[in-house]
Length: 67
Image 1 (spheres, one colour):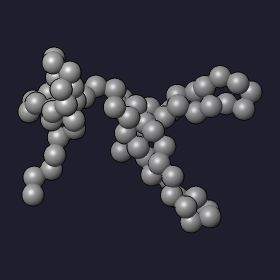
Image 2: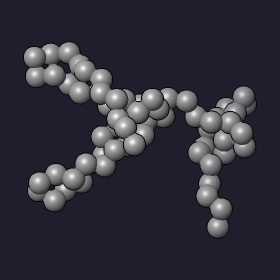
Image 3: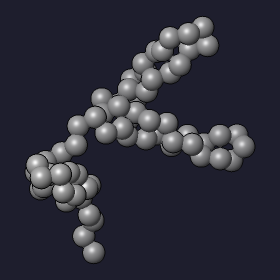
Image 4: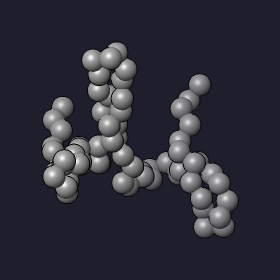
């Protein structure tokens, strides 16, 4: 069975599969992280493989993830 493409709205506001050759921009990627408790959480990465960290003192910091 072929994998389905993401569903999008067309010009007529109808739901259909994303046309072949089109890509989604800005869709987050997820990095699985195993915790000591045995639970796995998935942290969102941007499409540029950046992970945004919230700082305790306030603000955020972006970290480049490498593969």
